[in-house]
Image 1 (cartoon, one colour):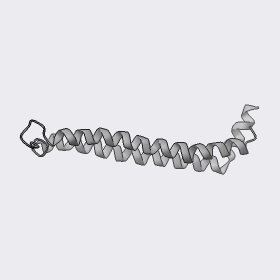
Image 2 (image 1 turned 90 degrees about the horizontal axis):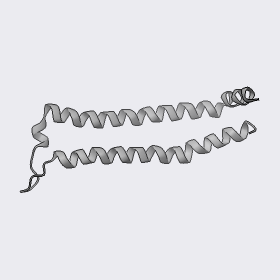
Image 3 (image 1 turned 60 degrees about the horizontal axis):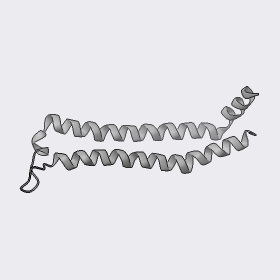
Image 4 (image 1 turned 120 degrees about the horizontal axis):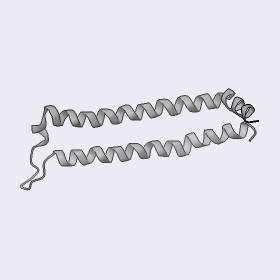
Length: 102
């Protein structure tokens, strides 16, 4: 019984579209995140004086808000993926399940 259901689902063109879209979107966001994170680390490693510039008269430097920006970017990019998954990917999954007869 379950083998038939698996065959129906994997034979559905919408299933292949879902897998392809979700995989490519996940890799795109992963690459973007890696570029941002490793870019920040590269600046720290090779041009740290640009992040050591003081902001105002206090002890805060440019590196602190930029580092917080990297963390905020991580949260935002995760939210973007979750929103698309909840709207597009879940709807497509529901269509596949409905068409498979379950």
